[in-house]
Amino acid sequence: MNRTTILSNLIAELESFPEIKLLDAKKDKERFSRDFFDYSPVLEQKLGGCIADLVVRPHSVKGAALVAGACKRNGVPLTLRGSGTGNYGQCVPLSGGIVMLMGNLNEIRDINISTGVVTVETGCLLGDLEKKLLSQGRQLRLLPSTWRSASIGGFVAGGSGGIGSVRWGFLRDPGNVLGMEIITVEDDPQILQLDEKASEAINHAYGTNGIISALTIATSPAVAWKEVAIDCGNWGEAVDLMQRCSRSAVELRLCSLLEKNILEKIPEWSGPSMGKHRLLLLVAPDGITTIQRLAESAEAHFTLLGSENLQSGTGLRELSWNHTTLHMRSSDRAWTYLQLLLPQPEIEAMNILKSRWGDDLLWHLESVSQQGMQRLAALPLVKWKGNDSLNELMNHCRDLGAVLFNPHVITVEDGGLGVIDSEQVKAKQLFDPEGILNPGKLKGWKK
Ligand SMILES: Cc1cc2nc3c(=O)[nH]c(=O)nc-3n(C[C@H](O)[C@H](O)[C@H](O)COP(=O)(O)OP(=O)(O)OC[C@H]3O[C@@H](n4cnc5c(N)ncnc54)[C@H](O)[C@@H]3O)c2cc1C
Image (tube, rainbow, N blue to C red; front, top):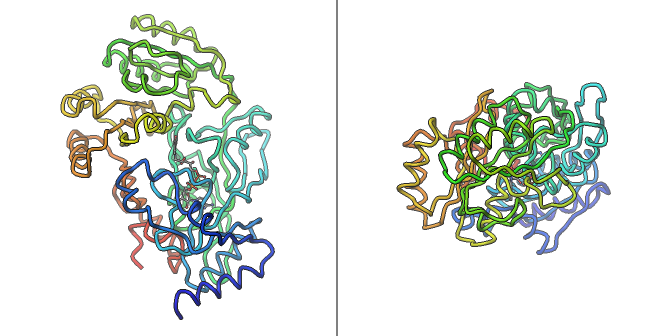
């Protein structure tokens, strides 16, 4: 049977289900086949032409399972989409087929009052979930800087960490994701409940090895965070202060450091640039005096900006993580970025890289907890000068001992530690044995 006939059969089957809305207009197919991969000029070249044959929006878990079964029986690729805010083309359908929008599966099923553990459907927006949790005295442990628009399922399947990582590490750290409900891709799909251990293989697998319909996650007690900016004239002293703040006994939600050239190009939500490097912190109220004392002992300029206002959209959250990249790209589209864990001592590696790359490499650091240790993650801004130059820079970082999470590649493995996770591949064998889900993104899958 040719591709057109297969698709017509599939569409006829899906049209008979009231639980599913079909979107066949060219503009919908184009819009829902993209994410923010244009942050990478490399991916832009590769993915610009990829387009779904059909977009579907199920209204229930049952509807999503009907789509999964129909795709499997007809051998049509199925790519899942939350809010489409990923940066690496995670939800771009490389081989066409169906893109399934998960946004209508958005019920918050349960918040356990005594433990704070929440069970929520995949498409629930993190902003909506956070609002609901705050009304119960809880908050999410980890949020991407796209927290207003991104979905919880897309964050777990495609993201890694962000606001909160200074304390809670990354989504794949034990204890953050406690369980999942998934739909298998079989002739007659099953809805399975996975415990914490079994969920690990689905976490950050780009929706290649199971359809997440709901997740159970840990939360933390709500804190009325205060926004603080600290300006330092010297980069080495700024890095040192950042480390002293994040290693202190003060509760932090965010601890970012921006090189002064970045501050001059992004919105002035943390105050006008003083021509210095700036630390941006979200601090628990009882930690303010300590952070002020640490700043003053480093002869840095401390500013208490006030309480975090989640309504505004102009808070420190929206200047951190990849939002820094977003603002820099608004000033000049030639900026792209890298993601790395710096080798220790960080300042030495940064100085070596700076002396070679000058102002084509601007430092943006985020303090993170990595397996219980405070480390510096870097999301440096990189001036695009072509593939060869980017590769030379990445090799330079690796040679110095940095761990690179390459944002210019499309597979789970190449964007991660570069190695195949056999548990992810085993999960695909179990839950998507014919390789229908998001083909081309799991390198370890050879079928
Ligand atoms: C400006 C900017 C800032 C960002 N900041 C951060 C940050 O701080 N931290 C961070 O981690 N990321 C960040 N990101 C990337 C992205 O926004 C987040 O990871 C976000 O949480 C993705 O959620 P989403 O709903 O948009 O997912 P999508 O982009 O829709 O999907 C992401 C992946 O998850 C898969 N998926 C979606 N739903 C399901 C499902 N139900 N089952 C299985 N797989 C599924 C998709 O197929 C895709 O592979 C940023 C991106 C931008 C553009």
